[in-house]
Image 1 (cartoon, helix red, strand yellow):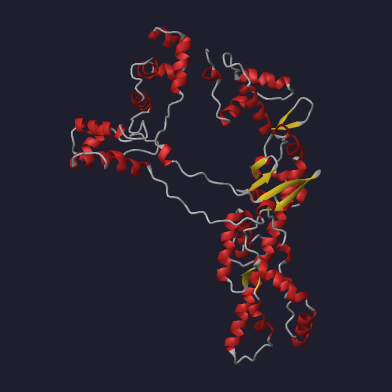
Image 2 (cartoon, one colour):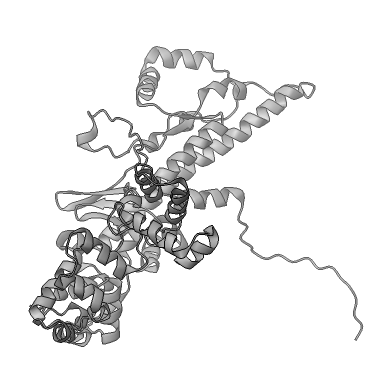
Length: 478
């Protein structure tokens, strides 16, 4: 067979991710707070974009409505001007449905000043410098402070500390005792057992039953072998249970009292309010800049084309025309994002109407594909809309992905959401007899009695996702 090179032409459809398409997908996926920063950056980069102020907008609308202004504008406009419909872009009327809570219309907001939190190392070093410690001993103590993790535990063995600093192991132990005497109580411990013992000794409870429970019977305590502990400590099982309850009040991670991060507040992107018997979806984008095309460059684009000799004017016109197209596209993309988010949330409300009316027990199984099919969009688009966005509802604030979950089949053929099953399991465990806690198999049997088909291993998986201990660790003797 003879082989030779050849060229062939063929056509085939290929999806090309242009820069504008990538930016549109990014704007669809980002939450409202991040969108606010992106639009402010676009305003700085595109001179044809400007932010609409409510006062300026009302004044402009008043001027446009006046008959004198309209007559003057018609007289000044030439007959052969460029076919640019500025009324479509000068006032962005599509962005006038911003949600403003009734209680916030007359409230003056003050800017929040961030407060710097003290780290665990800074707190311990500050306490050390108030103590009368020799310089060489202070250097060793500072080294030990640097060896603590966020929980307040020593992550480096003292042998390694002695090798790194060149100090005797006895001196390292004395320095560690200094660290363990600082606050928060329990810091500087090498393991959980030592951390709990330090806290009890600080309370003056050394050699008590609680102290002996940790010092002598820690392994049995972790595995809740209360009868064995009672036999070895020569006390009753009820006394062991009471001592274990005291141990539960101690802090296993004392360092987090100082180094814990500030809570992150959730700003909902959507708001669902009930109006009579219907639920209304609103966008919580009052802080998002409202964009329009700047009128400062209107005169440049209204001029007739200059001759080719005037290259500067031609380049200027081309530059402004390019920025105008970019501004138009951005405004249209933001509006498309608004419509898509409202469309997806409205579909969720229709599918989860019983949840909004009655509560989480009536949450139905729902998939992204079901919503995409109903609103005639691709599943990936719905996924981007729900990614990282929250909605404020009469039932509370939820992430949009909260409403999507797999389903479990019931005996009557209906489907029940996995979140509903988790809520039932949590309720059963909260109402159980603590002396005889429910096993995973028993919970599965109770759910079968309620008509829900679920396996024991599924119950165990949901229980672990809810951070609930197995039955033998939940059992109490008194």
